[in-house]
Each structure stands twice: as C-alpha cells, then as structure tokens.
Image (tube, rainbow over all chains, first blue to last red; front, side, top):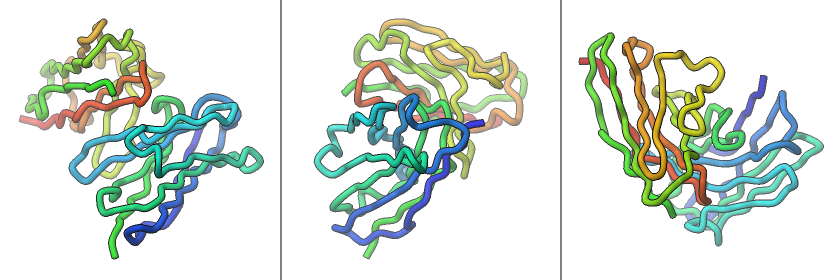
Length: 113
Length: 107
C-alpha cells in the first residue's frame, strides 16, 4: 500500500521560505511522478508541480520563479520549497502520486507575522 | 492554462437519487480527466481517471463519461457516505488544473 506523509512547519512568516517534506512508503519515488497540490481556504485547488521518476521537474508557471521540488531517493522523500511567501500562500498542502492516485493527509500552512 | 468550468457549485440530493456534475475544459483534453471526492478534514480520493476508469475500490454507482471538452460524473443511488465535495482535474496539459468543486448535500 502506498502511503504519503507531509511534514513541515504550520506557520511561516511573510517573505520567508516554506519547506515541506513528503515521505513515501510502499512505492519507490524512482518510479512514477510525485507532486504537490494545495487547497486554499476558499476551496480552490491548485497543482503546484511535480518531480518525475528521473528527477526532472515541472512547475506551475504561476509559481515557477518561487518554487523548487527536489528529492532524496535514499530516503524515498521529496521536498517542496516555496520562497518569498505571502498571506496568499496560506493553504493546505498535499503531496500526491502521479495525478492524484494517492495523497498524503495534508498539512495546513499559515503565512502570518 | 486550461480552464475547467465545473457545475453546479452545489447540489442537493435525496438518498437514492442520481446526480450529475459536469466539467467543461477550455480546450480538448483528450479524455485526461480525473474525478475526486473530498470529505472535510480528509485528503481527496481519486474515484475515476481517464474519463471513465474506476479506480480500485470505487463503488460501481460512480461513473464518468465524455470526450473533447465536455465531461460528466454521476452518482446513481446516492448514499449517505457520498456526501462530500467533488472536483475534476485535467491532466492532459501542464499545468494540471482543477474545477472549482461541487458540494453535494442531502436534501
């Protein structure tokens, strides 16, 4: 059974960086695609980006200048870094396999001073 | 970006009803649409992928259809456990994009 688990701070100050980790069990991240999705307080969902089995990345152009998705295959983890956050980045962040075949339980991140 | 217009925003149904949600894409998405169910405080759960393929564990009362720009998702014989929000996602073109969601409530 594939399981994904997000971890990271629940509160980030404006202008700082948001860093999240997704730990995967039951499936190697060297197969398939692994992505980040967020859900805003108003319920809008946004695909952030993904990292492929080979390590190549694709990002949402709306965030491209601020984000980085990386991985550590030895730990079967992948990571999201979102720079220069504002209050508009407040959301629940999910990691997911492929186009959402499997999801983590989500981590709520609030951007506030 | 491909825009996904999902309707209705909310839906009220009685147990046993059939309900239908639609998503219209701003361009042809070649059947690369998935449908998700989300309950409060829970992660989304994929129910259908590639327009009409039921994901393992999805009850047969759920179905999907469509082609080109127009797609639909139906629940026949609504059960109480189906009360949730539903989203479509196109994954034909990057960036993937979601519909705005439909909240299904009991009448």
